[in-house]
Length: 94
Image 1 (cartoon, rainbow, N blue to C red):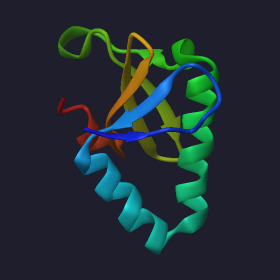
Image 2 (cartoon, helix red, strand yellow; image 1 turned 180 degrees about the horizontal axis):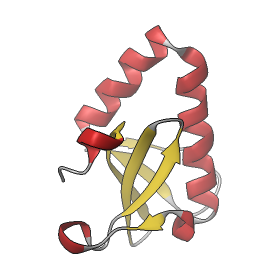
Image 3 (cartoon, rainbow, N blue to C red; image 1 turned 90 degrees about the vertical axis):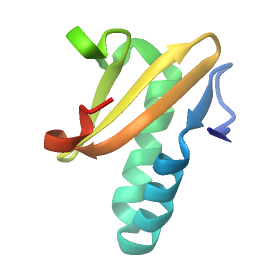
C-alpha cells in the first residue's frame, strides 16, 4: 500500500497500488473527475463514517459514491484505507 497524505485531520489516506495506478491514469484522461475523487477523499477524511456501511462479505467496509463510481474504504486506527475505486458493477469484489 502507498500512503497519500492530504494533511488535514489526524486521519491518513492509504491507497493500494491498484488505486494509485487508477488515479494516475485518470489524472491524464479526466482531470476534473480526478479532482472530484480527491475532494471526496477530503470529505471522507473529515468524517470517515459518512460512507454507506456495506454488509455480508464486505462487512467493516464503507462505500462513497462519486458519479457512477464507488470508493470502497475502511477505517483502521488513524488510517483510511482505500481498497478500490470502480464502477458499481465491478467494485464490490473485495
